[in-house]
Image (cartoon, rainbow, N blue to C red):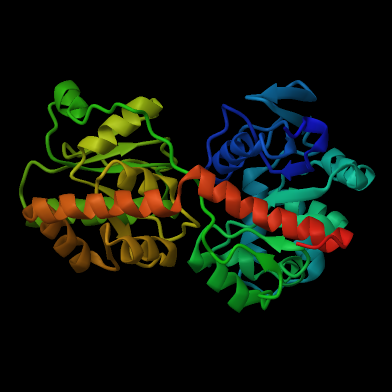
Length: 404
């Protein structure tokens, strides 16, 4: 049996990491590391921050072990000033600017962890490969070029304003390997940057989905007396399409009186309208989330910018259909490939989809079953780890002259 010393040593570089950290990419980094630890000797290189708004140091230990994964933490040299960053972004993103402006933007964006970058530079030879999670942050922009010949980028890229910065025209050509979460991400990145020659996983990457063995789909009815509801799960933010969702839902209820509720779970980053039909439950436990999800008529995912959407896959796993923002190619792709949900691009399509799902419960249940099969075939952890291992092994082989 292979011993730990015989495993390839992999550094996973990510902006935040920890049990207290909320964020799709960060959660994917942690769960992926934990599922790969039997295949690789993995160390995480990250900041001491928990909050991405300020990047303030909150973890105190330089090293710790979390669920069997060694984590090296580095202090944030300069926390982010949100007002200063937002003001400077308005002058850079989507406007004429210099490369010096972009350098300053990445410093302000953060997390500015110069010690982490120094560590990568000084210890490049200690690892067989470096895996960088999320294209957008200082940790990737400054760290990846130092080890590009043994780097794998999990970019979580999608069509959003910052990806058009000039810095990324070079960055996306640097890594030896790319690990894509979806076909849509691969198509967009290769069209945008012309990097189809780089070792990659052909589109199906993603995250495995794990849910409890038992769920109580009657929980919300018992606790709150709510029987029919659409569920939104995630950060409640205008950038996630929530402002439009509130507008569409309230207009829908005005035009289609019923007992349907919009139930929101997650941290609010914007005002939530005071409305008897909108229930904001805040943070809930994982068990509560899955119970509420299992009992929903359908999941609503309003975000126009998603690189994967774990909650969509979780809802499908629980045999519930989804209704997604069709302006997001990734979400639309999930619906089309799975036949597990519907998508909308304006209010009238939203209204029609909601009415269809509510008036055709048998078909909606069938969509839920289709979605479950889609996840089983494509988003089980063993399959994802196999795809990731294939990319890493080809990257390592290309750098050492090994044959594969």
